[in-house]
Length: 561
Image 1 (tube, rainbow, N blue to C red):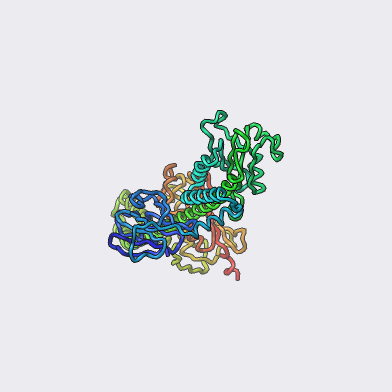
Image 2: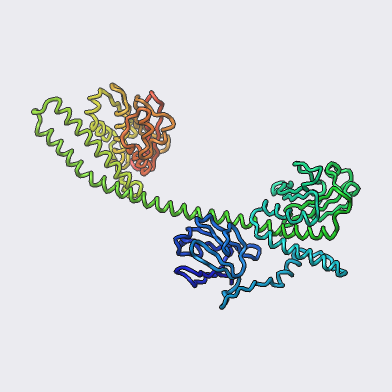
């Protein structure tokens, strides 16, 4: 089994078997091979298995990856190669680790040569004489060398350019092109091209025979023509006549299950420039190219999947930390708010005692100051209660206790709470309740807090001498009750109709002149109405006031029964 042996550092001598097609190396514990070295990046490099070979690729590490002393981005590994990551030396073995290492070169196994022959020259005719045998051997040798070169390339464009670099001098061609078929419409897409530098007809335009290339792609058969203008298969084709093509070869690039594209070369000199032997060689090169292209695409797909996996893991870790921070924040807020509740309650009690004991002894100004202090303490108490109950609603810890209640008594009690402010600002509150809904079933404490928050907002945002209307009527849904509170104050822009029900989302309203507190009241209302199974919304326009409406389903059902 292939393996990596750590040859320096604290883990010297540790052998790490390579059991999968993708093995990651780095300092992080998430890697397959963990290297305890501060000079090693968290995700330093990967070892990938492609086309029966192992390759090492640097993962954009800080200090780079070295193979046999040379810094590499991507490198095919051979038995005994020394790998340096950070300050740690590793050694790669393509089989089990030998008991004693030698510096001898690892020979190429004979089986590899037979595999290349079987894969790329199944239709090569048997040689009939020594010259033919020698040429066949040279061609196989070239294909084997080409195969070894291109399997270490991980970019399709780079692969195509390398293939043309190799075959151009082999066939003494004037022009060469590699084209791949587009998956969506099988049209040919030019990937790489070469032209003879001394060609007098050279230009920057792409000028290959589309007739020949399309025939090869459609029929998936190699084509050679020794005299293209006279060839009956392509007679009078403009791409041949216009390109002044004399000899041409074009072979298909095949994948395992599909046609991938074509390799095309031509010559504009004498007829008969290319031979059947050359066509066989180009066909074998194309077969090797097809395997390399599929391996590159598989590698790219695996790379994307591993990158997405790493990003996903990082996002999960970040999300976990954020949730922890959010939980800590909520715990801190709840602790602080809970500790504030008693001092605020004691302060309110003290103010009430001062007002009672000093009746008749305070001036009007002192009474106003005392009332202002009581109002602010009440407001602070309301904010504390909102925070505590929002926390309970978010954690499903708030108990709902539904019972029969008198709606007019509840509303009058809430209005009385704000009577001093209403009287001082000379505002009026008008209540309209339908007799059919004067008694309902709901959680009285929650309902009182919902109405109190909405009425408080209406009073605060109404103009002096303004009117406020409270209405309770049967809703359209069966056995449901609709509550609405309308004012004629500053109004709310449409873009804030949803945002105002979010926690701490009042900054935008402050910018346009609204008087706002913490932004908790309406957030509580939305959550509390939701806990009662209802819904809440606002209808408002700037300068024309606002109407807040919420519907409680089933509030009449139990009462009627």
